[in-house]
Every structure is written in C-alpha cells, then in structure tokens.
Length: 247
Length: 330
Image (cartoon, rainbow over the protein chains, first blue to last red):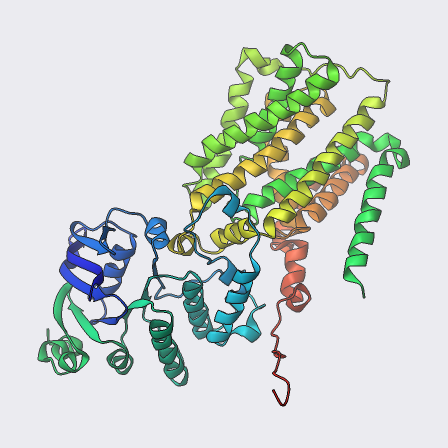
C-alpha cells in the first residue's frame, strides 16, 4: 500500500508557541485516517501546514511523492489535495448551485477556461452532488441563508465537485444536529468507497471517528502522542489522560 | 407571460429611445452624452467594487490615461480627424489596460480597506504627475483637435460614440457575469481565502477584472476628452473628487453587485445632479452632498439590493420542494 500523504518531522512555531513539533504521519491511498487531540493540540495547524497556509519551519510534507511544504494554497489544491474548514466557509451571497459551479476543478486554467460557460456536464454533476448531500430543494437559496449544518453539507459537496484525490475534513460533524450525524458519516464513507477519495479527518466526536477511521493519530500539546487502530487508541491510557486533562 | 418577448421589447424600446434622444432634446446633447459616460463609470466600477468586492477609488486613473493617450495621438500622429480619433481611442484603451495589468499585479494583493486607500493614493498621484508633465501640457492642460463637422455636429457625434460605448459595456459585462468569470469574481468577493483553497488563481482573475474595467474606462475617457474639449489634469482627467467618487456612489445607489443596479443608479444620480445645477444654483454642491449622505444612510444596499433583500423569491432565491418525482408504475 503506497502512502498518498507523508508528513515527516513537521515543526511549526508561532513566536514562542510550538504548535507542531516533530510530527510524522502517513495516510495510505484510499483509506480514512483520523486525527484527534484536545483543543489547542495543533490539529488545525497541521492541516494548515499541509495545504500551504503557512510554511513549516522544519520537516517535509509529501503528497503523491511531491514536496508540498514550499507550494502555496491554490497550487496545492490544483494537485488534488483539498480541505474543508472548521468554521465552515461557503460563498454566502451566491446560490448553492453557483457555489457548486464555482468549485469545478481548476487544473486547466488557461484564458479560454477563464471565460468559459459552465458546461452542461458540470451543471448535472452539481445537481447530483446537491442531491447526494440533500440540498437539492434549496439549490437556489443563497448559501448564507442556510443553517450552519446545511452550510457544512454544502461545503462538503463543493469539495466533491472539485474531484479531489484527497480530502482533509476539519471537524465535519461539529455543530451538526446529532440525528444528522449518522447520515453524514454514511456519506463520508460512501465518498471514500465509491469516489475513491482518501480522507484525513479531524474529529472530536469519538463515536464518529472510531467508526470512520481505520487508523488514528492523536496529538497533544503540539506533539504526536499516540497512533494506532481505533481499538488500541480507545484503550490507550495516554490518550485518555490527554482528553481528561491529566497530561 | 412570455419573458423573452418582454425582454426583447424592453431592449428595443431602450435602443429606439437612446437613438432618438439627441433629436428629442437637442439642447441637452452634452448632458445626455454624459449620462452614458456615467453609465460606463458605474458599470466598470461595479465590476470590481460590486461583483468582486474590491472597492477601488482609483478607477479614475484609467479614465484619465485613456483621455490623455487619445489626445496625444490626435495631436502628434499627423492623422486627419476621424482616423486620429479612432486610433487614439484604441491607443487610449491599450495604455489603460496595460496600466491596469501592471498596477493590478501589485495593488490587488491588498485587501479590503487597504486596497481602497491604496487606489485612492493612485488617483491623486496620477493627477499630480499629469499636472507636472510638460509633454502632456502640465497644469495648463491639453486641448483635443477641433471637430471638423458642422457646428452642433460635435455634440451629436460624441453622443453616439458614448452611447455605443455604453451599449458595448453592458452586454460584455452581462456575458462575463453569466460564465465562469462571474462565478469566480463573486466567489472572491464572498470569501477569497476559500476561493484560494479551492485552487482558484485569484490574482489572475482579479487582474483580468481590472483590465476589463480599464478597457472601457480608457475608451470612454478618450471620448469624454473630446466631448469636453479641454483636458485639465485634476478637474477633468484624474478628477477623483468628482467622477472618482460619483462612480462609487452611482453603483451603490442602484445596488452594487447587480447587473442593472449601476445603470439605474447612474441615471438617477445624473438626472438629480443636473436638476440641482439647474434649480438650486449656488447650493448645488450642498444638495449633492446631502444626496450622497442620503444614499449611504438609507440605501446602503442600493435600490436593487434593497429589492432583493425584500423579495428574494422574485430574484429566484426560493426553496423548490417540487423535486421531480418518478411517475407511478416506473
């Protein structure tokens, strides 16, 4: 099994704060890997480093064998590595359909492409994906008028519209109504199985992540605390201590 | 109701009225020409300020550049009047677009208020440079060549030039907004970080948007210089305090980020302004100031923006519960 994403010894500091120290993890192609840890443990910082928001101070990040740590955000996205945001981000004044059409792959970005019309195939795909997340009836509403949970679903659909190779999901179930969480989990699994998209998921909901991920990394205080299969992580005393504040 | 028929009828009436106007109101040809200049101002400003969320106070620079470049070609090229004018307009547009490309790659890295302040500086600097540069007449300005036709022919001629430019700008922008370009610049307006995270080459789109804006501003600037007949560096070409502010106001009044908003805003603003000059002479600036305050306070979203918030379903923003159900028995 080849690793699609390899982080080796990543370190990131903000002034005197060490947000990530010597983090190494790998995500095998086609799998779902989880990233957990208490608040402030450096999960989102690691995500931001991977997708190019800020350069890392040391270490290396390889995506499909290519070094990512010196590339900027849009360039990394164009290689098929995409992320969603913890504080959901959609284009609020545009309709759901427009949000979807604005999210088509940007790999061919010539001048012709810039001024092209949205193709019929793109429109169809947008409709299908909106149906997939259950927002088809609201497709002509402005994204800013949707509830937070619906915006999360829309953001998820936008990411799928992009046809990414790998997707980083930052707390996909945070703020979502508990009855909808099962549906969302099911969709995440289908995306992995049916669309073949590799996933790295940050999640605080233990029930969700233990069911979803095949392998889990746990961060605490900016360092890698533990890694292993879900069952092993669940019973790892260090992880339990970190979550209960004993660390 | 046949929407296409209605739309066609509406455009047809608009075209007929626009063409007939110089004969319907011959005394107002200059003011009516300026109406089309204002429409182009508002539309090109809205491309950045409304659709892309980049409030530019520097668009006046491209207007002035077009105006000067055209006048210089007319003065120095040795061509006779009409070829000189049209070559000059082309050169004016080209120089304005080039300026937008060069300035854009630097300025468009700024966001929000910083971009607004930066572009404000750009307009002021351009006026000062033009006012001190002898080749283009420095502080005493530049006079475009005399119109060769009959007396009164100049106004009619430039009325149609300005009308043609406005009539080019509107459908071009409409076409752009309906495609990927429109989607992307709206995405940049709503959340530029998200757009970058979705792989969009934002700088390229932003620069292209400014160049398109500059293209039409350069053209209309070239025409306006000849229409006015005298190019003053600070009061006509790089008139940031008047035209530069008005273009913002007109777009906001009509509703920024909408297709028709800037057009409606330009018409209302221009007509109101001309009425102030006619009936409130001596107080016209005060009245204009009060109008500006009134617009910003009571119509922060503009006329169409207000209508869209009020009746979102009339603008197509509605839940469609009637998802096509499979027929029984299938």
